[in-house]
Length: 141
Length: 157
Image (cartoon, rainbow over all chains, first blue to last red; front, side):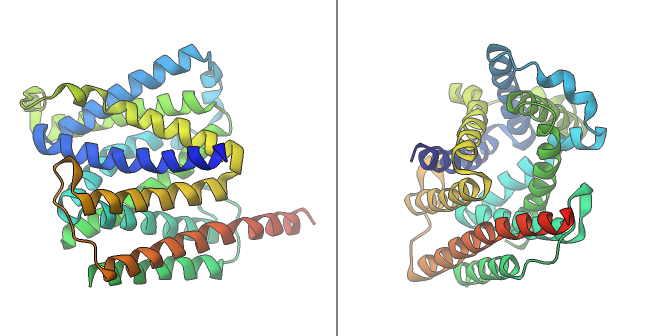
C-alpha cells in the first residue's frame, strides 16, 4: 500500500513539475526557467547525496561515457515540455510524451539498441500504444 | 498546435533515451549519485543553449518570484517517490501507477485551470480519450514483464 502511495505521488510530482516549469517559463523565459530549475534541483540532489553518504559516484568510470550523458537531453526535453504545455495544455502534452516514450521503448527492445537484450516485437504492447494513439485522436477530435 | 504536438513527441522520445541511459548508470551507481549527475548535466546543457540563443540576456531576469527558487525540489520529490515505489512494487507495477497518476493529475489540472493555466472543459470525449490512454498504458506496462523473463530463460538455454 505504501508503494502505491509513493507511485501516485511520483505521478503527481511529475505533472506538478511540467505545470510549474511552464508557469515559470512564461514569466522569466524558457532557458532561464530550464537553467534555474536544473541548477536548484542539482544542488538539492547533491546535498542529499552527501547526507545519505552515497559515495557510489566513484564507480561512474565503469559506465560507458555515452550513457553518462543522458542528463544533457534535459535541455531539449524541458524546452519541448514547456512549449507544448503552453500550446496544448497539460493532459495532451503528458499523454503525447508518454506515447512517444513507450513507443520508442518498444522499438529499442525490439531492435536491441543501446545494448538492450533483443526481443520479438511484443504485440500486446504494440496494441497498448495504438490504443493510446486512438485515445489522443478522441481527445483532440 | 501541430508544432506543440511535434515537440511533445520528440520530447517524449528523448525522455525514453534518457531513461535508457540513466538505467545503465544506475547499474553501477546509486540513485542519488545518478540524479545528481543527471541534473548537473541538465543544468550545463540548459545554460549552454541559453547562452547561445540569448547571450548575456540569459541573466537579465525580470519577474522572478520567490517560489521559482524552490521549483527544483519537485524533481527531487519525483526521484524519491518513484524510487520507493519501484522498490516496493517492482518496476512494471510502480511505473504503471506513476503514469496513470500523471495523466489523471494533468486532467484535474487542465479541468480546474490551476496555476494560471487556461481551463479546458471536461467533456465525454475527454473521458473516453483518457480511458483509452490509461487502458493503453496499463496494457503496455503489464504485458511487458512476463515476456522479458520468458526471453531471458530462452537465452539461458
